Image (cartoon, rainbow, N blue to C red; front, side):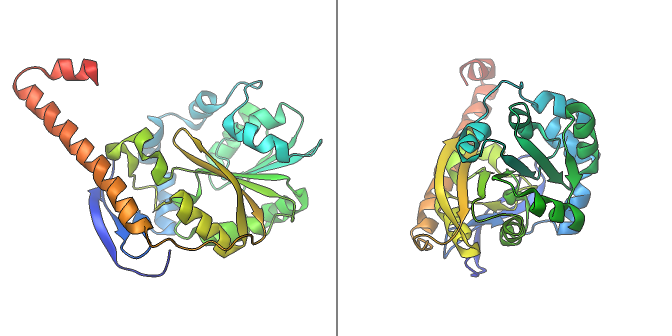
Amino acid sequence: MCGFNLPLVFNRVDRFRIPSRYGICVRCGHIYQCNPLTEVELDRFYGTNEYRQLYTGGCTPEQHIVKATPKEDKVTPLFELSEKYLSKNGAVLDWGCSGGWNLVPFASRGYRTLGIDVGEDYLKAGRELLGLDLRPINQDTLTAARQFEPDVVLINHVLEHVGDPRITLLQIMGVCTTDTVLVVGLPTLESLPDYGYRNFFTVAHINYFTVCSFSWLASQVGFRVVEWQRTHGGVTFVLKIGYGQEERIRWSEAPRNLLIITRYWLNFRMRTMAKSLLAVIGLDGVFRRTK
């Protein structure tokens, strides 16, 4: 992100054992995939049965939507964080909505909703199952989203999948008013304990932010972080258009992030070695029960 292309590679395989190189920038500490799929390859990958098998256990879009959709009266963390920024008849845009399940708590409470995504099969299933206004991302829908004048734009676990998050944030800025807030969910490095080292890195994720690095990136585009909170599996940020206090890259991020990675790698290696040793002496069942 800082433009210094000299990563220290520390991992060469993702959680599904797919060959993929992950490195940390020795200058700013940003962690990223060094050989990511291109935009065309990513679009093709997300549309394959292999992707669904890896990430949803082989569910169909309909099955995935039914499984992921919260009950209408449930207060989700996204809803709880967003509600105070909504006007009485407020509008919520979900950028990267998939099947639209994050919009259900808003729609059930009378807020206007619109979801956009690139996956037509999920959009079609979401329209049929949930009765939501879900559209493919193109110039027409971006124009419609601008006219929608959203109070809140949700972009939940999307930016880690794109090659250049700046471009996506600038596109989103184009549909915002000065009063719009962005609610951005990310699996940041601070959430590594929720996944464990073995399961944290995936071929589908290109960037691995920290609270500091994402705040800096947002400020470069023209957003400021209003608040953020730790949620299971990541951190959720609230952004508004406008420059606040200038964010700077902290050069202490590189050694800090490397220490975090090293700590959880050592934990992972020690558990793997202990499991292998217990298997050799016939006590691996005890290990599984106490894990």
